[in-house]
View 1: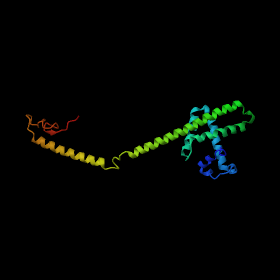
View 2 (view 1 turned 60 degrees about the horizontal axis):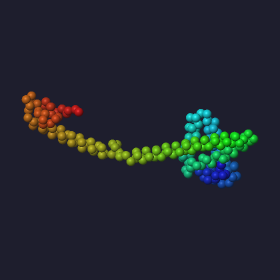
View 3 (view 1 turned 180 degrees about the vertical axis):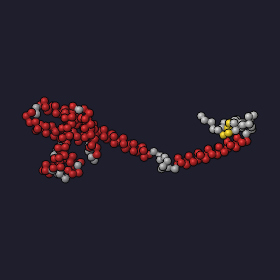
View 4 (view 1 turned 90 degrees about the vertical axis):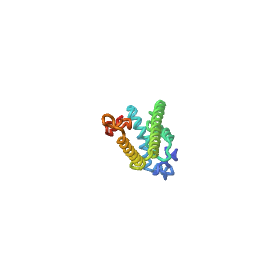
Length: 199
């Protein structure tokens, strides 16, 4: 894989210095990474009878590559040929034309699922960024801005002035036959007491 696609090595900091095939062949870390890649594919194939686990596993594998700077989803397809060659070498004479067709369909389905996981992770990341932008653009309410508090204070002052005016009007209103204040003066005045009507 890395011999044919040297540009992939530059994506991994610990592999960037492996310039020659000999250096790559002698690198234990690179060998371990290759083993992890092949093992992940193998695990995915073995899990095909458990649909939920299969998709969760491969979506997770695909999504984990979103965090790699410079990685593109097209790079997943570069594993197809090396995988088929590895299977052919492993099976030897048992690798028939029929087996070749089966494994070609299998690896294609596996990689399509991995790519889908990558795309889903990218979409989630975009949505999260949009939500963060929306939150940061919202005006600050209390505990961050004095505007709402000032507005409330002004409203309280206006209400207090209105109450004073109502009392004055009530005191000056002519008495009704029952000794109360005239309700025509203010709708809040009833039977001589200031009782706000409820709605």
